Length: 141
Image (tube, rainbow, N blue to C red; front, top):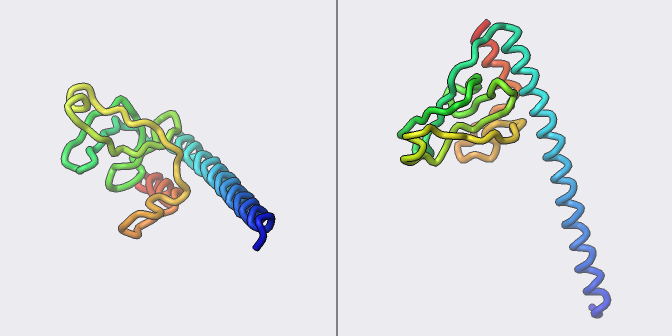
């Protein structure tokens, strides 16, 4: 293989990697937009049905402590670790915890909602976001 062929091969690989990364980013953006629409529709339907929001509580990573938050919304899973706040933002309610959180409460930040909750997790249990939200609305019907 000549030096020129080697450079061409490296350039082709670089372009292929860049194209793959761009396609992955586009897929992620589309999924996040679709999940955001599901969350927005959930909040509208919860309000329409008169489902009262509740004060959300965060759990420490080790699962031993619970911390107050300033968030109001609806838990969307039975473990009460994922929730949608009244502003239509998705939250994973697992926090590092510590003394500050005990004294002043936790401040979990919103994150993009996944289309499939738990995908890639160790336990192999994943649930489509649409299913979780529909179940939560069904719990009140």
